[in-house]
Length: 563
Ligand code: DGJ
Image 1 (cartoon, rainbow, N blue to C red):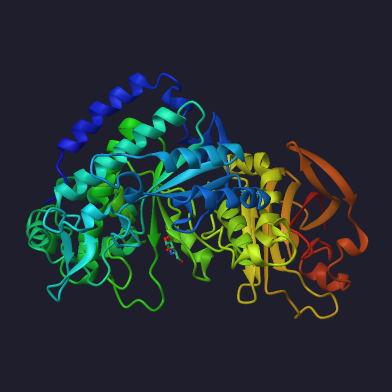
Image 2 (cartoon, rainbow, N blue to C red):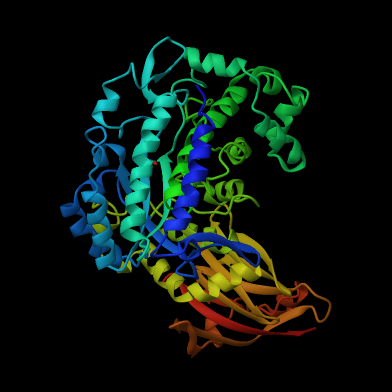
């Protein structure tokens, strides 16, 4: 059965209660998302916040002793936020008896190390599968129905079409959120919640249980139809095409409105997962209203169709379905391990879906990803997965703080006030480069900022494997550029003299938010090309900013123009 509206009503009632009893902290001081100028930002303790985060491996947080060994390393890696799991099984091992010892221990550990937390609720599903539900749920298939696939077999995946599943997970989640309100609303260590983990059905394009078949034959809910009609012009093109190909109907069963086939199945599943997670989120927010997001197992190149990846997850095709079905969920976020990070963030960053990347890489590519998500897509944060994994960063020579991501985080932390200001003003951009994508032009302010992989002056064809930059326009002729293995030139984009020259370039750093110049760069440090005639023919000066591979580092540049 589909989730019933009574949960909504209960949630509204609880919201009134929660607002009334937030004695220690009015709702507006809780972490929340707010539009500041052109960007939606995470507001923490009344100030915009940039989450320089990392996610621990799945079961790390089930042992406080283990976490005691991890916290100091996370500090050394320059994280300010940690994503840690809380599993339904860990807090309700016996039905109706809650044990929040782990939650309290995680809060204490984070606070001791001056870190913020984002809790991942591993409830009904984790990577599609119901592996983190309590044993008493797993063992009672009669009471807690599973999903049925084509072969007639059930899989270890709780069905979304069960009120009992929904209510039992919701009861535990609400108890968890109530506990967070009780123990954290004064200190606000917890910033956001991830609802479940990479939900969706693996093994078939949709649930084939009797309850699912019955739901498929019922009319598409009017809320979804109303959303499609209201947003027809801006719907994701493939979703719009599918709906219009079936006649853009405003009433009918699922096959009548969306046709048949695996994409239609995926839409059907997305609605049902969205309803389930949306209802849980509403009920949780009634206790303690902090932002909630989902994470998606994105389609992999080898996947032939939904079911190879979890069908029903918020994919590019179905984000609209999630927005219609789960308005209480603030963000639908992608987990991106694929090399084309730049394309995936662009698919998920939409006007109604600000960007947060809860899982990605932690290596040099991860540093580039963090810069790009935050700079080019005004992301509210970045978080590589498995940050505690001893076989990864922790095992490398050079110490933790010397690794690429911690270095990148150190610089992003220094620059945070300027970054958040740039996001709000719409005056920030970023480049994400590799040997296949060697250049990027960023229109920003009165110039186009041309970012190129750093060239060897004697052999310009020789380029590094990756480079990245984050650019903030701070005045009509002034930019802050943070970069790694790139060179940067400027092209005027407003009427006037065609060539941009470098009036002054400073290397430096931000100390407590204030720019503190170091070396004044000129000569070899800015020279790109001695062929001044060739450069002039391209309206270039032959000079530019150069960033080596010892960073990332930041420079401030003042430009002038000549012809
Ligand atoms: C994505 C999942 O969301 C994580 O919990 C973890 O299982 C990773 N995959 C493993 O690479």
